Length: 319
Image (tube, rainbow, N blue to C red):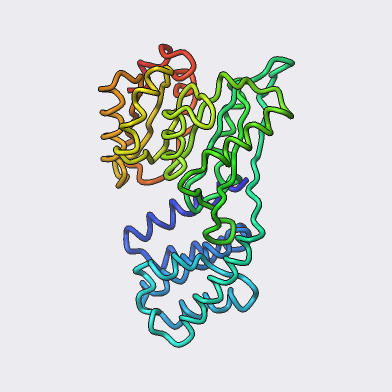
């Protein structure tokens, strides 16, 4: 199960916020062998922590060692993260970034976006409703599978598309207009599995949440019953032209965000606009949560799914 990287990130970033950089670095190093598919991301974390510990030469050596073994890192993150400022003028830095940019470009040309499908439990011969879950920018389909898998026990099948833009090794994002890609995935799955195209719910987190809300409200590339958005929402100017379409289609939505999440103000603005426009939408603010999935997401998922399905059952639990 790939959810281990999220648990590790939560602990590492928590230590980082407390300026316990040495403990965070030890934790990353101890976890390398257990999470080999995330070695690039964890090496980046380790380099950032080395810089925080005033060891820029060690940080650069870590990054160069990974690249020397044929690996690479997200070049945008290398160039933008303030933790690595001390490396920008170091000998070999520009060459390191250039190699990573070339390796990303080479892999992007070979990247074919795929989609995972998990069928509803005990669905029998009847077509099952479908939840389409979109990962965060920098995430992957496999990483979010554990978060959304409980819906298969609620009678829903689960489709998890992978983003079409490669950011780093095992790290994907979405083009600005992913409707066509997602539509093709669901059309193909509908031909090979018994899915109820009249009962589709879009879900996602961060940038995936923004796309999920926008696609559900617009009714494109397919009509959706509603959305479940975690730690994200579209810009208000994107939402405003879609409210009449969504209201006419009876779209419902659930927004989930932490009270420590920097995007919470945007989420609140979208919630207020949709609610004022007569769209049935609920906002769940989770105390102490940053820009991530809640640890108890499974407990929030069932009432959210039921609310979108019925519009009544979970009004007392989703506020």
